[in-house]
Length: 342
Image: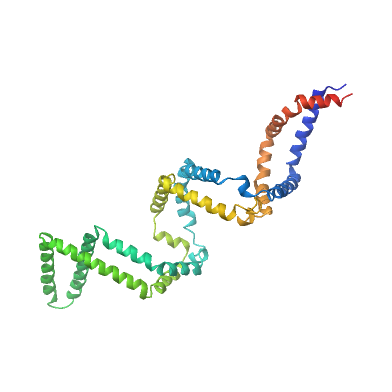
């Protein structure tokens, strides 16, 4: 008479072999298609908000942002990725910028930005209110005067007798500037340049509203749209790109766990629940742009290689046996086998 434990061992061996056969060869694709359909059928009966609470989701989102924003992998990858993109992707001569980015959305974005008059006015007003705006405006005026004098000097050099006159005028301007810098008039000049800056901001405001800025900007876009993507590297060196990427990451890393950011994340979760909380789990897939075929395809893309690697040296079989053995050797199963064994 066969002992119950021996029968249990044989049944355990049979089930381990059965499971291995289910995930091997062509059978694996059939099993994936069957199980995905079954899981989605069950998921279509489960409402999202019935299994996920708002407070739970908030904690999860905060944890993902907090841990993911400063992961060692991300820190290591960003710098290397920036270098690689600059060397290989941005250096591509086979595609133009117009091949990558459509003209219509660029034009719509530009039109929207130029039409945000309230934002423009606020930014220009705040610029003129900045404490250092006066000195900046004064420096700008100095540079502008120098450039004009230099240009006029070059022109005068080609006119007989005009060079000496320009030299005298240039010396007078420099003397007046020095006197202004060394007297109380300097403060008055600073206030004057600040007033001039406000006048400049008004001019900028009117230019944005009335001048053909939109057309000029689109001409600039069209000029670059027909050039290879590699031409963009003329605007940015590899070191600049890497530094910018790391600086942006630093901003994200140092901001991710601030209280205000947490409030933003919480609000995002509440908006998601308000919009999709009554969907079933399966009903969320179309909203994410996924289909059952997409899920099966991705499982089949990576699953077979992972399973075959796990099957080597009996590792997968040992893990399956480890999970099933407590059931087959339990007193309950051995008792059932003992009853069925005359």
